[in-house]
Length: 121
Image (cartoon, rainbow, N blue to C red; front, side, top):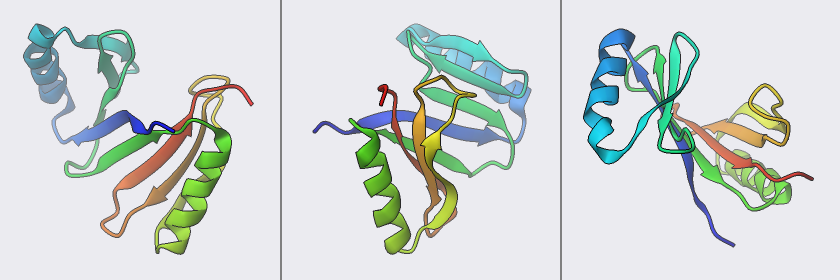
């Protein structure tokens, strides 16, 4: 089993300023805006792994990639048992893509922690 960070999300108080900053600062590293939804942008080289959103600064979204949907379910159960708060039960999120299976919990500081599997069932 290999677990990696799938994506991270940062909220920006001044979205336009932060969008311009990250686009310029990360360009030398080969990263660019791949998705632009108006108040959310996804950046990366080939896959958007850094998401900048308009919102309250300080909020972090951290998603870990899981090898199976079963592991997403196990992550959710363990996180809830450890005191996490539900922020999205395990399930498909077709608004992201047809095989996006994720679960979301809030950690003790209110950060949104996710496990996600991109593989078909």
